[in-house]
Length: 378
Image (cartoon, rainbow, N blue to C red; front, top):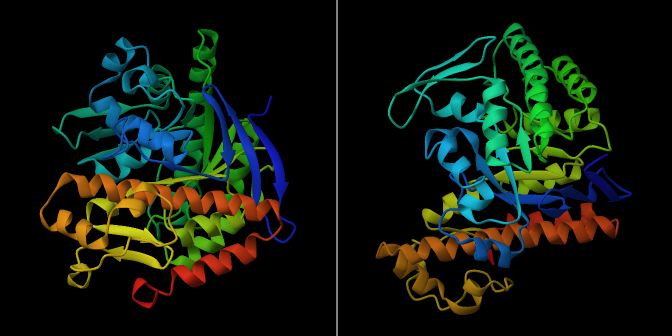
């Protein structure tokens, strides 16, 4: 039985709306998922996230494996009981973090050997172990362990990574199948690799489709490639995926990237960007990013965004928020994080409405023209 129900596809592009049916409730798509790497969305409470309207968050297997450890979370009965989030959780496999954070990373057929970025201790993460940890976490959606690759590697290197990822998928599927026999109700997503070689992308997409996982993610994008390359390979890969499966692109969080993904029929995306830039004094607005630390906002009594209905914009001025940032008050991280996630959630909700009215391309164009004007021109 498919976990995805397609509701409507825009008549002028591949953008579509639908519903994910998961163990902890339904999720309307397209959907942006806030990142709670360590089991918590930075600076916000569960009630904040629910009030904004999110039904799913993302946490990370690599980080939770290293700290506090799966044994601690198992003692609580899973991640939902540990962090008291009673809606859906998607967990990344840890592959990207091993690729990007570890002091040592060696890929073999067995798995990924790495040193912890916390204490330098050595670990081996196999596809079975990654899946087992995610089952302990009781992830509603878990990602297979894959081999992440950098841009500009050789075709042979890309092929090797693709083939290992495919073999690891089968091992992850076996592990999840055994866990389901013991009551696990989560779903496994496969990941398309192939780097920036069209034929390898097609081969990997075929492997994922044949594997029959509940959903498919497009890996190896937004890893430093130029914008036109991202667009080309996003479009190419999305067209190769079965329409009845939910499609996920990991690690995209700006309006331009998100709306381009939606245009290509992508249903799910996540990124640390909205909370990360908030901690650095950046707010997302209809007219583009606003750096609250600037001197020109010292006496500015306006809200961050006059068109935003979030509580932050209803109550606080740019002048006050700038004061908080300059004073290093923790409150500014909370307020800007709330606003930024609210902004992206509202944008995606408006995108869903536009798709259902067959006017997504008009919405995208209007939104980005305004967003790219810049705050100074509002």
